[in-house]
Image (cartoon, rainbow, N blue to C red; front, side, top):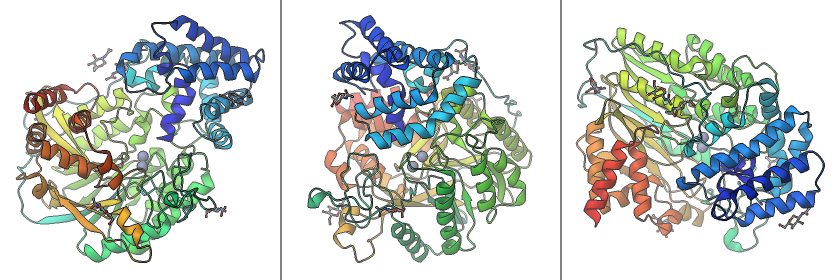
Length: 608
Ligand SMILES: *[C@@H]1O[C@H](CO)[C@@H](O)[C@H](O)[C@H]1NC(C)=O
Ligand SMILES: *[C@@H]1O[C@H](CO)[C@@H](O)[C@H](O)[C@H]1NC(C)=O
Ligand SMILES: *[C@@H]1O[C@H](CO)[C@@H](O)[C@H](O)[C@H]1NC(C)=O
Ligand SMILES: *[C@@H]1O[C@H](CO)[C@@H](O)[C@H](O)[C@H]1NC(C)=O
Ligand SMILES: *[C@@H]1O[C@H](CO)[C@@H](O)[C@H](O)[C@H]1NC(C)=O
Ligand SMILES: *[C@@H]1O[C@H](CO)[C@@H](O)[C@H](O)[C@H]1NC(C)=O
Ligand SMILES: [Zn+2]
Ligand SMILES: [Zn+2]
């Protein structure tokens, strides 16, 4: 969320939705004011007070009205205007410090964070940004806007519309996907989005003005602002004892786990306070605890976007500057993960944090580093074509698996349907899922902190559901969710998901009794809760249609998505929220919207 604000400091504040409300009035004037205000300040011709005036003009115009697509054209124009100024200034030799200064001022004066936090965050990102502008000689504002504001459809005709080479299906796939049927089953635990914060302190200020509260040493202004002992619904991460309590609970209540999928995000949300040694320590501490407590149960990990330093940045292959390169993280992953993974996985982990291995004969796992597609990964501005050759590698792994009659699970952090996953990447990923749907039994993701399900549809036959990605939710309560983990029951032959359970505790309730362990309980099992016979893609697609017609089902999905968090239940879910939740289930990439439209029609017909 904060990185989202960060994007807007860099861009939106300089353009984008600012234009909103002024369109009828004086768009050119505003654009000029942005240009002159920024340019003047960067060239030392204007005073801080004049820059401040520009910012205040912008502020009055309803900043941060994002989702509104009607603003798209204005957003792109303004984004371009602001970035032209910044890129040109850098090309003309304006010092890094000046950008640090201007971006910090924008951030602080827009009250996104306190000045020191703004300064620290911008300072962490400025070197990578400067490197990209300095070394990518043909970088244009159009290019930047087409990536970071892709949800507004900003265009760059010069950007490469890249594709992956995907050999066509053989006439009859060797492996014919079985109908989901129960023979012998395996249990898989999915844990995700821990966001461990060593600075968490019960009783500290849980209602601060920052992106992360509940910090040691801070004092609540009123008693109800005090941070809870067992974490907090507000913008707070996870204390150590909550992590160990969760694992203890898992171990006592699920003694028959075969495997564990860990889908990333170990680090806290204090994105201004990361460092290579600091992140390394936290990642080691958590993975050590996994090794100690889970013992010999195999864990298949992925990297989260928060593991990197600076947050979200996964450097382009060949960028070797130690202070910019992500190599330290891949080295660390190779070292820490070797407890669970065979040596053959090392090469690709070192290259880009992804790997494949057999879980058992005939059953393969593929762990992707989907963080590279995240549009906050500035390295996409440098080179967005299939970072690390990962998708091309994925095709090769799947072709081999097809040859060998294997079934596959894919785990990754950022889900494909995310509007902030680069559309070209997610389109190619969807094509790969389409091509190999007959042998990909399921996908597992994290990142959103929501307990949700994403259905993939056939690109050539958009009403046919072909695959499913399960999101694991989060152990962190950040923000307005209860902590959870999931237990999947899968068929030991076909690796199809037969059912799953979500387990949570009620944070409000747990905090009433700090001295006793939270009361973990099974929130639901999928088949029972939704009344389905199985979790095959077509059955789930039918379920979304039933949901569209049935208010009680949509409300149930909302309740479970946020894991029954009291603050979300109090907020409730209106029609727009219900429709958004439904569409989230069926848009596996940006252009695949037909099923969403169908659901809207069903919804509107049934509810009016
Ligand atoms: C900038 O404007 C804000 C009001 O929006 C004011 O509080 C602040 O003191 C101003 N800073 C400078 C340096 O002018
Ligand atoms: C980009 O490539 C895809 C796949 O080849 C194609 O469907 C799409 O129309 C292309 N888009 C543009 C803008 O060229
Ligand atoms: C892929 O990139 C090209 C070039 O920027 C763009 O025109 C196209 O819309 C993108 N495709 C998708 C699915 O976003
Ligand atoms: C808060 O906790 C962190 C992490 O344990 C520690 O480094 C820091 O010194 C603590 N700060 C205060 C004010 O206690
Ligand atoms: C998708 O639809 C096409 C055209 O109907 C079909 O040939 C293909 O087998 C379908 N894909 C899957 C995974 O079922
Ligand atoms: C959570 O616990 C609190 C306190 O016991 C209770 O008031 C609330 O209803 C519970 N929430 C749910 C969803 O059960
Ligand atoms: Zn997360
Ligand atoms: Zn994440």
